[in-house]
Figure 1 (tube, one colour):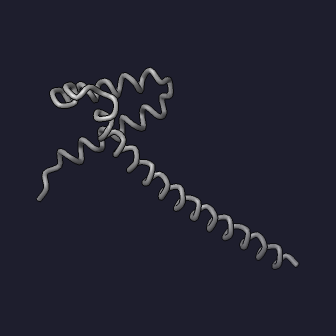
Figure 2: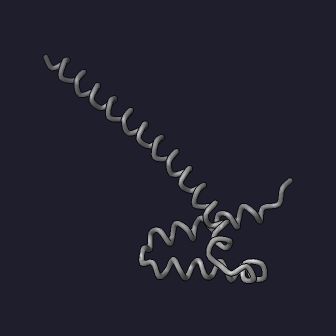
Amino acid sequence: MNNFYEQDVLLLEVTRERSIRRTVMVLETKRKRIREDLLDLIQNMPLLALPVELTRDAPEESQDILLEALSRMGDEAFARWIAEAILDRQSQSEIPES
C-alpha cells in the first residue's frame, strides 16, 4: 500500500512541475510580446505626445519628458520597467554591427 502512496506523490510532483513549466513558458511569451509593444510605444511616444520641433531638435529632451511623466504617475514598478526598456534599447542600438 505504501508503494501506491509513493506513486501518487510522485505523479502529483511531476504534474505540478509540468504545470509550472507550462506557466513559465506562457508568462515568458506574454512578457516578450508586451515588452515588444512597449518598445514600439516608447519609440513612437515623441510622435504621439510631443511638439514636432522638440522631437526633431532634441531627442534626449523627449526621453527626459517621458521619464518625468513616469515619475509623476506614482507607479514605481512600471516606471522602472519602462526605464529598463529604454536603456536596453539604447544599449542595443549602440552595439556596432559586425
